[in-house]
Length: 410
Image 1 (cartoon, one colour):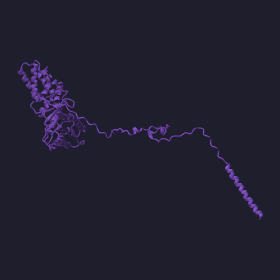
Image 2 (cartoon, helix red, strand yellow; image 1 turned 90 degrees about the vertical axis):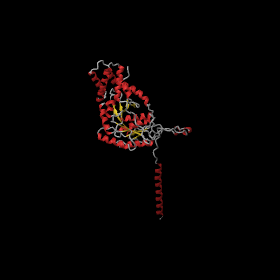
Image 3 (cartoon, one colour; image 1 turned 45 degrees about the vertical axis):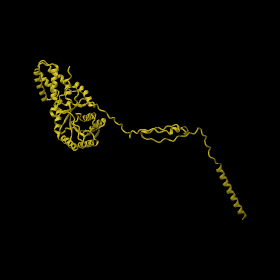
Image 4 (cartoon, one colour; image 1 turned 30 degrees about the horizontal axis):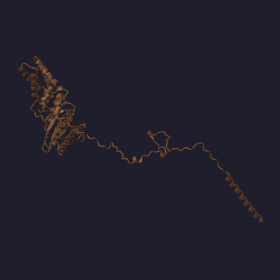
């Protein structure tokens, strides 16, 4: 029994010794020592946000600053009133300065001189022929050709030549002054000095004067309407413009620009809109504003006479719902000659023309168109345009026109 107990104790002691050896062996096992650093450690900045496409770029190291190195605004600078920066999107457009047109009387003197420089080749040619010692048939034929070339027209030319032949025969001897006086009298007879050439723009007690401007596109119709507004403003009248030429894209813009220059408002509508409706609104606005005159620019298409007649007739009827139409002015290009007469006939059939405006009368020797168109329509030339300037439109004066044609006496 004792032997068994002794064997158990020896076994427990042996187990304890073996366990101690294992634990001790584990404790003696060490990890290899860390290697010593060879350089100073660096701090790498965080990468920038990645970019794509054309914005992609090669990463680069950037110098970083401590917060102490960053400059901050002073207290005084921080409380200063911030400067206002104008936003170009919401900025108000510049206000156009209103012009003061030249007085009518002043421009007549200047335009008379310009007309004399450009037109007197007709008069000088006639005076040269009439001064010949022997006025034979060949000379009279040359006089006829000179008048026809100047667009005087066949019938007026024949009448003028017959009267000149008779008066020269009776006169006998002919001095230059006598010939000039003779020619001036006969030309004045053809042009006419007894016609009423004033513009009817008075209107009624509660309605403005209404003027409708007609003519073929390209004759300067819209420009003439704008220049006429300047003439009226120069005479102290207030004006409203009606842009009833809705078939030409730039017509309304062009007319509005003319109006803004003299402070006249323009009534317009959508491109391709109803011209009669715009004309009606223009007169309505003129009444509401108490304007003196309403100028209505109409379309100038001549594709079909029927369409033109319907359109202008409708404009006329609609305008007359407010009151009578005071003037219908036909704008003609003086350089078109006989083609201008054809246009005049068509418009005269469509609407009752009360006056003629001749444009581009400068730089041409064809001043005889004044005589021809008056004879054709039986209505007077009331205004003439003698240049491209804004104030180169003036009332027509027969005496000044004829004096310019024949030139000053030498």
